[in-house]
Image: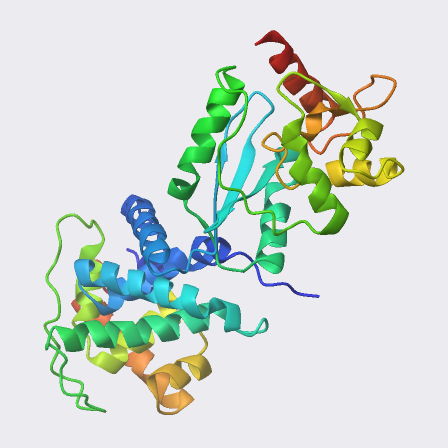
Length: 163
Length: 201
C-alpha cells in the first residue's frame, strides 16, 4: 500500500528543481513569486492528487501555468509563436545576487517553446511525452524545441561553447 | 568547459538560501490561507529531540526520537491530512512551555490540545492524566479507579502506551504497582529522567 507522504517531503524533494525551472522561465524576483505560487497551489490540491501521479511533472505543470500568469500580469507576454523562433525575447535582466544568473539569463532569452522544453527536459528531467502534455504539440515537436534550444544556448552562453 | 546541460544541475549555495527563505514564506502563506493542517518542528530536550506537531486546534502529537520522527509524520499524514509542513511558529508556545518544564520552572502545561488521535477509553484515560500532579505518581490500578473502571488495569496500560502527547499528558507518572517504572514510549530511561527531574525540582 502506498500512502501519501507529508507535503514537507514534496517540498524537500522537488523544491530545488522547481526553483531552477522557475529561474529558467522568469527573472529572479518573478521566479521566486512563481515558486511560492506553485507550492501554495500544490499544497491546496495535494490531498486530491492521485497516489500514482508523477509529482514532479504535476509541480512543473503548475509552475508552467504560474509562470505564464506572472508574465501576463507584467504585460510582457510575447505573442505566442510556433516556429518563428529566431528573435530572442528580452525577458528579465541579470541579477548580480545570483552567481549562476548568466546561464538563466541566456535561457530566458530563448523563444518560449525552446525555453520551456529546455527547462522541463534538462532542468526538471521530464520525458518529452510529458513535456508535450504541458506545452502542447507533439512529442517530436517538444524534442525538436529542446534540441534547438540547446543549440542556441551553446551559441549564446559565454561558457557553453562546443565542448 | 561545462555544457549548458551540466550547469542546470550544478548546485549552488544561493539555491539553499533562496529555498530556506521561500520555505518560510510558504509556511506563512499556508497558515494565512488555512492550508496548514499539520505544522511541526523539533526541539532539543534532556530526553532527546522531541517532535512537536499541531493542528489549527492545538498540539496534536509529541514524539520521542525512538518512535521514528519520519514514521510519526507519515502517520499524521495518513490519519489527519497530508498537508504536513515544517512550520515552527505554530509550535512557539509549546516549545517555550516544554523548555520551562525541562528547566524545572513549570509544573503544568497551559496549551490548547487536539486529542483527535485518541478515541474511547484511551481518550478518557489520557484526559485524566493531568490530574496526577507534578512529582506525584499513581499505579495503573489507581488510574483505572480514577476513571471509574477499576478492573481496566490492562486497558489503562494501553492508553498510556498510546498517549499521543507524552510529557504534556503525564503518562510518565503512572507506574507499576510494585513501584518499577513500567514501559514508556520514550524508553524506560526517558521515563526515569522525567521522574527524577520532577522529584528534584
